[in-house]
Image 1 (cartoon, one colour):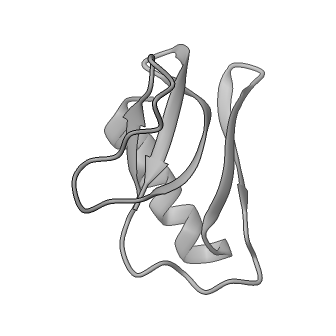
Image 2 (cartoon, rainbow, N blue to C red):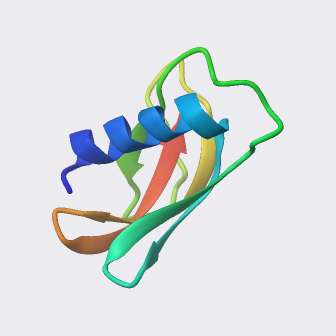
Image 3 (tube, rainbow, N blue to C red):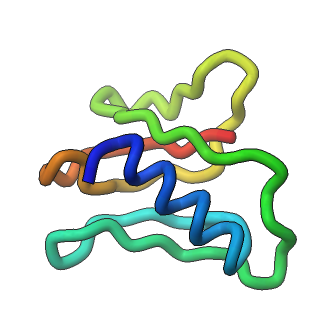
Length: 82
């Protein structure tokens, strides 16, 4: 899945289950843990590849979680921002 597809998957899942808490690679795919007790976030998450492990987000965004995710078939370090 591409970065854009990953972001759409996170947003769609958050709309049904609550905000993303953790993200990881598992068995050839990306898995997420979502907070089912919290309301749906007001805006979609942005996924940034984080090869330097800086946890940096674009201006105006704050980190939600960091971990690893498959982007274009490769498990890479990411930071998820909102």
